[in-house]
Length: 381
Image: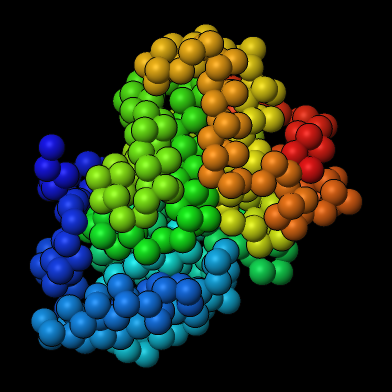
């Protein structure tokens, strides 16, 4: 099978090895003539970023870069990015990188023409209608990891640096106009990042599949996304140069992000405050929380995961699936507890209070209480 394709679901996607060279065409398709490439500090000096800037410069699009982006991007990073965007008279953003670069880049494009603070556009009710939609500039997204799927998302996660809360900022026009998925860009990912981002994609699929909301299309996408992770994440982890595995993982990441329109759940409700307070890696945190949340939700999801396990080739139905998740975590070098990634057990009450307010709770198959979340945090510590 040739892993190259042009898709229009949920946006225009140019998929295949070597396709980062099509950045100029993607910018033209999006109507961008003076792009600002937004990425994170860790990627700023790497060869893949320099190569992308070279491609832009050679086509007359300049090589303007903003990389003051934290692993969990916040409103301070956003303000600096918007200032750079406006000062350079840019007309679009290339969001380049993993979840942090993609999320922050999308928000720079969103906020560059707004007059209200970013928190006024949190994903609550119809708050997104407060934005001036015509002032949102176009975005080209180029993922360099296979995890968050933010390249096909209509929202970004931004951490409030003052309150240490993660907020979801939503607007339909935040969906990038064009996405370039080039698996060659992920070849240099370290094993720990390959594991954490891959398990983030898996968590998106697992939670979407668990969600009780009615969305058969997302249900099907989540199921196949789980299969791709099961088959190809171990290969990508074992051999980072395995382009077939890298390509399928990029697809799984987009599938997870598309599927979780159906809902997330307690895994993400727990992971968001841990990441905001202790600056942990989001996908790794999700992976640590996943076995306990599966057990908590067991009575409500057992039947559907009995079916999923059969499709995935996992013996033992739901119980076999949950055992597989822990084995996969262990194979990927994921810690067994949150304390191992810096979480403080003394903060459980605070973390549970933050988690119950997280929108992800609304997709959990079992209605959550603060006490439920305290118990889950204790299990994971």
